[in-house]
Image (cartoon, helix red, strand yellow):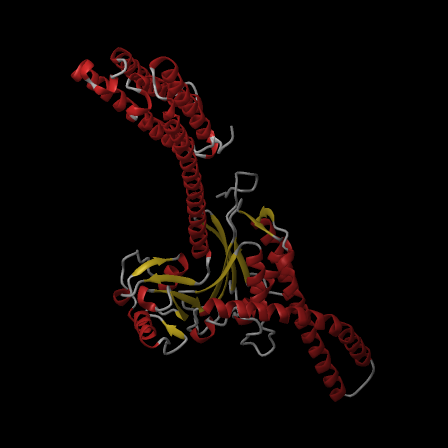
Length: 540
């Protein structure tokens, strides 16, 4: 036999359907027993042989009742139990039909219900096998009646039509069951696709950098992703209103609903965030709400700045390689000319040439540092030992008086950083501090501390600090307040810190210096060390 394997469908559905079918069989058998008990031999259903009718009805009812035990045990397997039940119906109803007068009693028509139920439950072509068994039983019963009970041979036509009905009902039940199975499988696939699509939409909304709000026609927020909550500085839940929480945004939404456009593409939201707005209707019109996209203009500008700087870095690095060779030649030729005897004016001009070649060389070296970010090789080491060596080198290189540069370490404080990068960062920060400091005792101070498990290094000076108008551009490339500066020192320092998982920030000092300046403080917050390996602790 062929058909749909049972493994493709939920087993619980099979057993539940079979249990309902067994309830019908029990009701039918009980009905026969009840009629026989009430009316006795006068019952027309047992006209040919009332005793056989009554006995067959009782046996049929007992067998059906025992089937409930097998159903609860689920043994034997489903196909076997279904075959036993249909086979029992064919045998019992054939005997009851014979006892009631054969084809004239119409008892055999009840097998149509059993065959239809078998087709719907089994969902396979096994139903045609049951129809064949029912047809054989009907023919044998009528043949026995013709041979031994005096039944009319002409009634073979009725029996044949009944057999055709068996096959027709079985085939129809099989076809309907096949369509039902296909519909069930299609519904399951569609449900799975919808669940997958819903999960994909949720993940896309969650990970989108742009803010997304789904609102209804009244401006009530139905859904909001984390980026929108961050941009709007509001953890609005579903059901909150745009009109109450974000009136400016609601005004643009209402205008878009009326005329289909907004008054401006970018909007300074109520919370001080500048965003680019885009409205998309859920359906063809905005009658059922819309999806609002909020693009963070600050992020867009930052990305554009990064692209511009990356291109600039590649260009300047390429130019720097070409500049260094002729620059070295100019510097060398100037040194040779200075060794010759000449007047003071000539010597002064040569010194100007030499100073400017050195300045160009410093710019080239700073530009070359732009390509070092992606080559970080962090290692764990004690910060104190590195600072002690750096302070000695810096004092010698800058010819500082004793005490101008001081430092307060913390023995045992370990960090993870690229040594070369950290040395470059400290060199840039300390040169800036020395340039703007007063070059007195303690003017340049390095101090190490630990807060919340993270090591912090501060570089402080006693200069006048930075004005408020310069703070926003402090770490921008090529921004400088010094006439001979390149504007790349702090930018490179911040980039190298970020490449090593650290954070470089500017903090103005609270203590006032003697001339009214507040000084400047740059703080490096190093990445927190993971694990309990050597060097990961902090000593006192």
